[in-house]
Image (cartoon, rainbow, N blue to C red; front, side):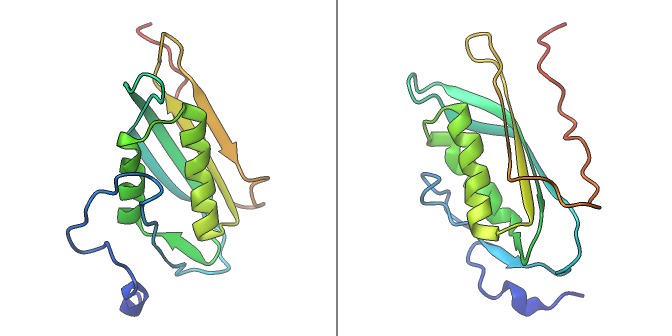
Length: 155
């Protein structure tokens, strides 16, 4: 059983939380890594990520896969969900959304390694995939393929 005091500073877990109106307003919370010094991979998949085109205001859709090897901290998953959904009303190009998510997580968590795959659905008939990685993955950590196929349309 984990030490319940590690959750004392969290402000969003366990209750109703208002949806942040922008990524800048979203609060990413973290908890201590229960296995410091052990290298392992944490994966979050967000297959229904949405943001807005900054020019037209039309919605854009992506399947995001976030992988990281924790340092001293883990991201608290409810705060990550609220952070990701804060992009719903945020206008930014695919590249800006994908890379800014990775950089924000890097800043908050100081992971040993992080990567994000942004598999965006077609806009104007062209899918755009955006990938970010903080450097070489740590040796000895099993890092599976992200498992998202390139967009093939209907055939």
